[in-house]
Length: 137
Image (tube, rainbow, N blue to C red; front, side, top):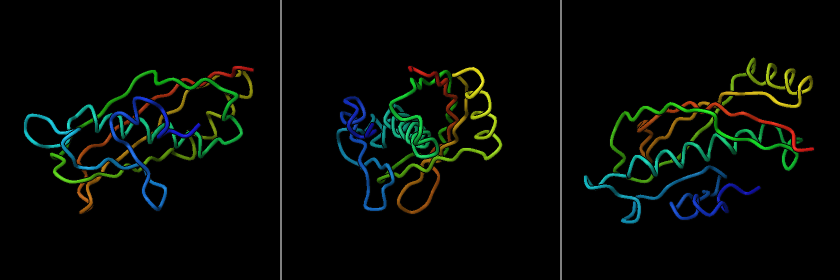
């Protein structure tokens, strides 16, 4: 599934840059009352990047599982006053634990960390997204 084709993700304005990263432009459609990128738009970008990280790390599961966010935490560190880019990561030990449990029970959980930075490299928010993944086959 192409993350940027999800209707709500499209509506918020999440796009892919030339390097393949998920980005969000600084434009009128996603600004808040302070003229910075709205917190909910930053959340959508970060959550989308976490979902894409799952697809990238576990391509063998694409189309065979139903992943849903179980819970998340996000900390807004600095106002976003220019375009932003998301970078997601999954710890190696988390990936191996996830695969081990999934092989046994056909369901598992995994945490994905995301940092959202502006075009100058300043971190505007960080988040952790806990996913529940279950086989649909």
